[in-house]
Image (tube, helix red, strand yellow):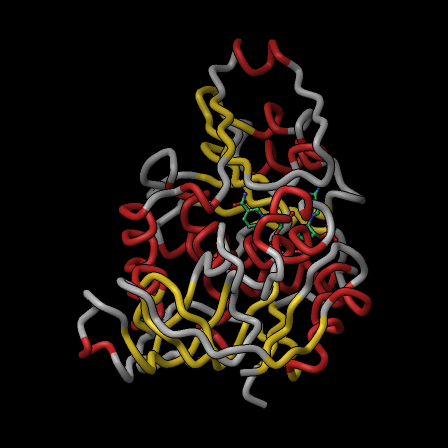
Length: 329
Ligand SMILES: NC(=O)c1ccc[n+]([C@@H]2O[C@H](COP(=O)([O-])OP(=O)(O)OC[C@H]3O[C@@H](n4cnc5c(N)ncnc54)[C@H](OP(=O)(O)O)[C@@H]3O)[C@@H](O)[C@H]2O)c1
């Protein structure tokens, strides 16, 4: 099969190579998927650049956690009725060498969720990291029905799904921060009730005005480094903050504002959520897909030969939406 592989960290065009390699066979408990689309996320960029030393034992690596396709064969212990099933894939390359940027992938069957009939393969490859992160970040501290939520970065891949899901899950008010008029349009299109330009406006003042000086119940935070000081100033007493990203590792927090206001700050990395939580999130996302409740932004599709371009789109922030690689094209 044809696959994109890398052995060293470095710029995409230098290290990502198109190779001919053996098509995998499904092991026990695994399914073999013919990949239709492979989704590119910031985590794939980080594993190609920053975190390489940690995963040196896995080289050569076929990148990408997200994807979609059709099950072509199954290993021992997997119901043969799954052959022919359309699926979407999540955390496909986590602690494994071979991800979705190839014509085929063999992976544990639990990582291949049924793709609803009304949902395209393109959308299937856009869901894993962004949609699952959005759902978990919104709900990890309990139901959000009737609550007010701030979603910084509402034009981002996670943020765009988070705004939509917050509305679908019954949030009373969804506020989002963005950095440009174009991104404001994306956040509004997703359903944000209030959109604040964090580069030009006083975010805390705007949130307080929009919430009758109450502050919000919950925040799904994309950048703890940039927003750490701001968080207590937008939260209601007893509010919660789910952190999934930070533009830089170090953060500043004003401690008394956290303990005097009983704020709860909790980070998470999708990879560690565990099977039960993934099944719950996967079935909730599939319910939303089946009911045609979600909007998706597939903005570019590249053939395998141009995987480096796809990485550069994501790495350089050129993409407001999902970038895909199409191995079969
Ligand atoms: N913990 C996890 O499991 C997990 C899961 C998914 C993603 N992530 C991480 O989360 C980050 C976002 O992922 P993504 O796929 O959504 O990326 P993305 O599509 O690039 O979106 C990030 C968005 O955040 C905005 N942003 C950046 N800094 C901001 C700030 N201080 N305040 C408000 N908005 C800000 C960006 O726009 P502007 O820069 O123009 O504001 C952009 O729209 C990445 O670092 C990714 O690695 C972590």
